Image (cartoon, rainbow, N blue to C red; front, side, top):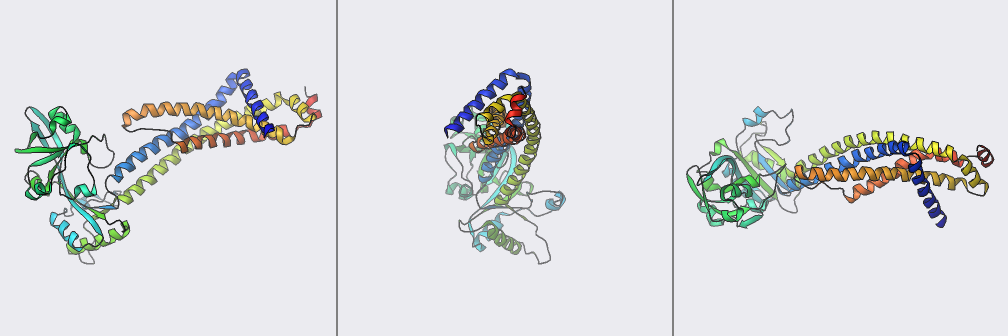
Length: 414
């Protein structure tokens, strides 16, 4: 162990000496490694952070949840828009029929969405997002409140003109979210009282626009929203012990019964699984990681040849020293280990420089992307492993050449 530590210490000293003596040559080689690490880890850090943020937003849509809609969310060339536009919209009555017939459902919700202008005194918000919801909505997608409460069962049943308002809308109309509670705004001539303000969530890539929305009881929302001209969707949450596949199969059969489709007729509805959406996102980001990794690998190969060049020159410059070491009893494996360690240390230095640039990148991107971009511990470990492997591969041939030297010939080379 002590011998290995001595070799490591000597290799570190010689590496630093190499940096001082051959600054330009070493700097160019380290730049290749640093750029490769920057590409690989920078892409992986950004993509991993983005994926984690989007997956969190997807999970907010509800676990083990299926959206029944006329639109297929997967899209693609095999999903023409005209085909889905011609389908009938979801109906409130269908929610009750599904609830009666399903054995695998724990909660079911119906939602309509549209846009409308909101006003309070002289302040106006144009084209605010309006959701008409039923009581079970919060059981599927829990809502966090900055202040206030959820709509009560009595308010849902009677279609009371009350609303939950998004944080940004509350600030635009009343200055602060706290001041919005208990106040009123007008929408299409109707005066609506605010009972709750949704906690600020920031920009979403997926999911509901909570910050810029208002939520109304479904029965009241029908007075201001034309259901035939708005988006409608049913959201079904399965029981904890039920798989998404089983829930999908059951819902497909029930919907075909409800809409009285014959065996030869194709479905005029789509079952969009949150789980399938999550898996699709994982696959997409996996592909992005591979592309970013390939770019980084090319840069690392360039850096690896640079490190190999340094090591060949170093071996040549130290030929007589290698001969003296072998003459006084140094083993070939010790010489091999010494040069491999030196190559690995050079790569680790390049990797450290690359990580510094990645860290700067995370600070720059975290603001505009509106979510934290970070270097995780697995990525840090991955960087160390990549640098060590690159160093070993770059140094293996010059180190082997040094280890095989004849000590007499090596000493005479001086």
